[in-house]
Image (cartoon, rainbow, N blue to C red):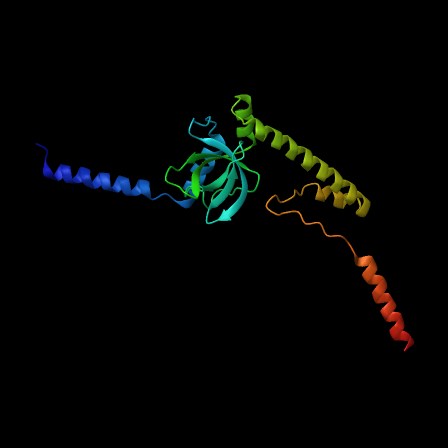
Length: 198
């Protein structure tokens, strides 16, 4: 039979070890999440799905769409919150939540460009998303080319070099405003000339 004092010491040491494991600093947690996010190239399992983020819905919920076109809500797990942000158009891997009515999946992994390239090489990337990626690249290159032309016409070469570094924010919807300042300027000039004559 073991000595009761030794037995109590081992129990005490086990408790201390369990407490120290549970208390991880925020920086250490962030480091582990980032390492998992960037270095994990495992392929999705059968029950996991690759989806595209349509829009954030608040409270760590995101509306996502599958390659087949099915839209549903996916929740961001606690380990990613305040460490990783996803935006409209990003791709994630989800696992289904069987008891979910509205929230039907949980985000397991966030896919970066390297992950997408790896999945494409392994023939695991959905064909519907391949077309969307190509369209997205074409749209970005067209909009960048248009922006470069406009910048070169309006500004000198230094300012156009700086604007090349800026990218469009995909979380904002595009709003096009027509410039109608020419008609309002002529009206205000006419009003001003009438006031001088009085």
